[in-house]
Image (cartoon, rainbow, N blue to C red; front, side):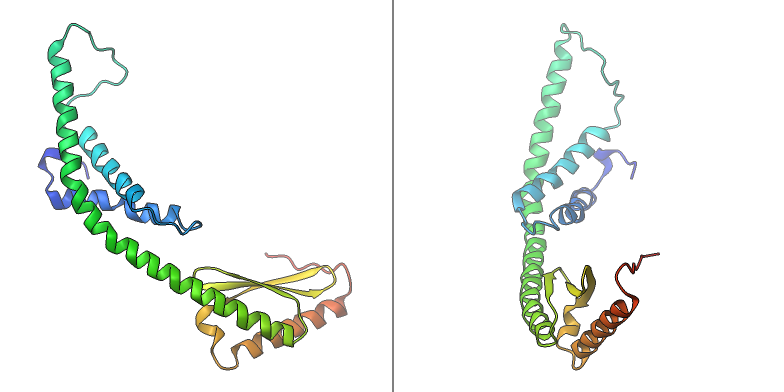
Length: 196
């Protein structure tokens, strides 16, 4: 969008600001901690960038300003005051629009955590029953499973949470692990499987 900031509607400005949310969600994906203030700060930063960059005035970077021009100082102060008023105007609306996003994110995160705990318990128990050592790590939509299948070999695969309770699914996984174990043992030590 290359329009002059002064010609943009409030909805257009809000749309640009709310574009910071997907970037923020991607950034916190590993930590899982949603900080409302930080997200709103990033949204306000987008508005500030729009305000400073799309005013339709010529800007010469790194050009020293003569100290004798009081008019420039007054214009800079007026610009700063206008920006502060603009950010204060949008702050409340951005908080209201970001709270539902935060709440959805936190609900989704809780569901993932519950699914991870359930998957870990069920898959670990099933592997143990079959005589395998396994490590199960929860992710957002699936569990990462690492199983020692032979001396010096670990098999890594993923199980989507929706499949953990599906009848017969884990039986098939255990059989597949057994077949891979047998095949590795029949190939002997030194066999390597490469991703190609």
